[in-house]
Length: 205
Image (cartoon, rainbow, N blue to C red; front, side, top):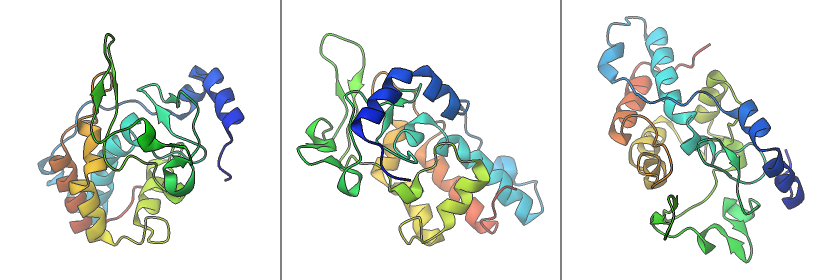
């Protein structure tokens, strides 16, 4: 799909709740530990159950907002188009003269005199278009995540490292005032990822 233009993005911003309602899964608040899946003897069934649990993170607004299938980022728990309207730009870092780091620094910054905050991490950027997954099913996200042609040429070990250690992924658990963090902890998410890999890295059907 072609990147969405500024005018189209502004139209989505005006549409607001209609856009959010059609793309937002239910927000998960808890993440089960690996031990909750130990009694599933069949590897394929255990891998499927583990990835479904991982999807509570992957389908959370903190992740979905930066994994659009077209256009620029979304924002907020209700997944509204970014305000002010912005475009993806080269490398997912925004347009020349208005790159992501124009407003997003190395850490979250609380608003002065109001509730909320500007999110921050270095780097601050969108996931590649090949890793856009808003609107995808859990099996589709799983297949995409494992595909080296779409996931940045990562093997399973690199996927685990990304999930368990990457700072931008970890921001999801520390998103700043005004945002709901993803469930569990990054350590727990990494453990689920490794258990999924150990069970054969199968996808839900």
